[in-house]
Length: 210
Image (cartoon, rainbow, N blue to C red; front, side, top):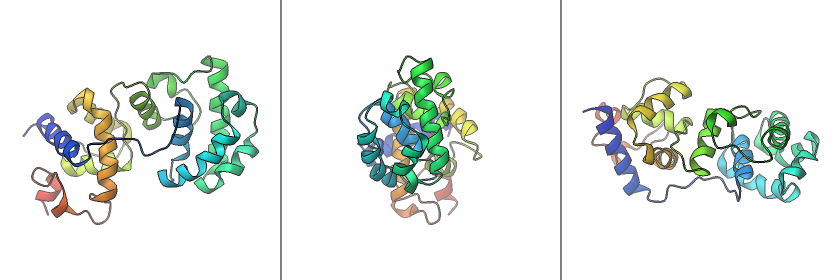
């Protein structure tokens, strides 16, 4: 079976299992998603969603973030871990957005990754969810499950992204990655995958190997 055929089977199986492919981070505009995604590094989305209402209430606009201080931002996000680095990046990215991008979140991976603290994973999420362009968000769930299925090899996010872009239908790639997160939490967990309950068990390489 070719990897493109395998990818097509995985896309359809996950689409049936998880028809609502939504980002699990709560946001109301592109800037909020950008900041929430930065906060989610080495932190659960559930924790981020507990933190962001207070943060966005205090800083409702780009200008309010730009006028704030790193210490103020730290007060709201300390429970997310690495809060000093994240606060520094949030303040710097907001100021760069204002000064270099006309106050708008850019719509390309190349421009997004110029922002402090923004890597390809974050950039892909913004490009896919906000601007509805083909995107591949290679988080831990995506890397783990794609490897188990047989769609990719290795754990380097950029290399896995390249491998998946080569086999996934572009129109399906963003939703596919969201569904992998849901599947990774519910079934294909890191330590004890529930292969017997998996919607992809009939074609998954890892399930076939036992």
